[in-house]
Image (tube, rainbow, N blue to C red):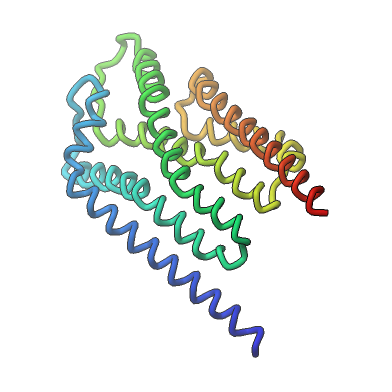
Length: 240
């Protein structure tokens, strides 16, 4: 019975922290919804023309999508902090301080990933795909298609840009090491290729433009893990 209580308390703590994250997400989405018109105007400016809608349902659908992405961005620091509080009892004092430093890094890298995709990849791919029409079509771009195309590209990049921080954290804990990541290189490349093909239009150039940064991110993660692994190895040798 003495062993069962800590486990139940652990589950209770997990449920409480998931509830905090869920409430934070809902509140963040609502806050973003209050300013969604400004968010729309900012993001729609890159379309180069006024976007069309096919019905009133499109307006709500677009606003909910934009609010959801904004809510996710605002919730990331809170979710990271709750994750830190959940695992902190199992960490040593030094590991706690290191893990706490990852929270702002997660948020900043998510924004960096979104910015990279929105400012660099999205305009290139958007105009490239439109250029394929060669004047053969009367283009009517709906707002729903425009933002679906944008979010399908930008949101995964926001999440994938956090890969180095996740690898750094797991390497600090000894869960990951560069040898393991190097062995996973081929399947990881395959997964990244599938992600690239999934989130991009069906043309070879767009796939290459996405897969290359993703592979670079993975290689950066291996390099980071290698540095941490060497440091841990030296510290273990000195303590012995």
